[in-house]
Image (cartoon, rainbow, N blue to C red; front, side, top):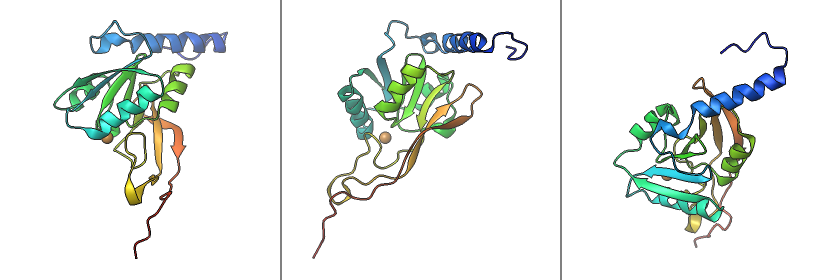
Length: 174
Ligand SMILES: [Cu+2]
């Protein structure tokens, strides 16, 4: 698709975005009936932090459908996301892929802004991300992490940065 030689750049950009979104449609994995606000999640049955992420999304108003799989890597691959972005669960919403503990706030922003992208990823499992909250002495602890916007060329850019936080209520031991 040529990006050059257009008389109306802004209009062309809108068309490009629409085409890119269409190419990322639900047909990629065979589910076609879900409205855009339904988040479909593939996770392993024993994954506790995956369940907690689903609870986070539901609290934030999303309808979530979950499927248990032995391994989410084949799903991730089928949805076109590189293993380098990999985490414990893979999801899809509105034609976008969500990988890992992506905060609901960025999912909502994604659906509002509708960028030409594969989706959002939080690689690994950062402590303190939604579903990865610590308890006890570690309550409130957060590792610094980035929410990545994965672009159609397979690269990514930072969509949101979360700074590290220390424990909110450290228990002193005497
Ligand atoms: Cu996890």
